[in-house]
Length: 119
Image (cartoon, rainbow, N blue to C red; front, side, top):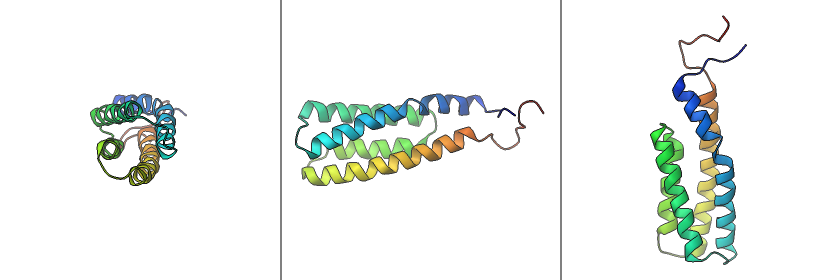
C-alpha cells in the first residue's frame, strides 16, 4: 500500500535527502576547528553552507531545521573563544540532526484527510 503524500511533503522529502552529506561536511569542519586546523576561509564556507540550509529549509516550511541552522550560522560568525564555538556547534549539530529526523517523519506521514493510494 503506497502512501499518498502532498506535493509539499514530496518537495520536503526530496530536499531532506540532500542534507546528510551536508551534515557530514559540517561535522568535519567543526572537528577541524577543534583541532585548530580550520582557517578563516573554511569557517566562512561553513557559515555560507549554514545560511544556505537556513534559506532552503525556511522556504519549504521546515522551521526547526531553518532556525537551528540560523543559530549555528550566527555562532560561527560570532567572536569569542574557539572552544566555546566548537562546543556550541557540536551541540547544535545534534539538535539539527534531531530536527532532521522529525522533519523526515512528518514529511513521510500522509496528512490528515488523505487516504492511502489504491483504496
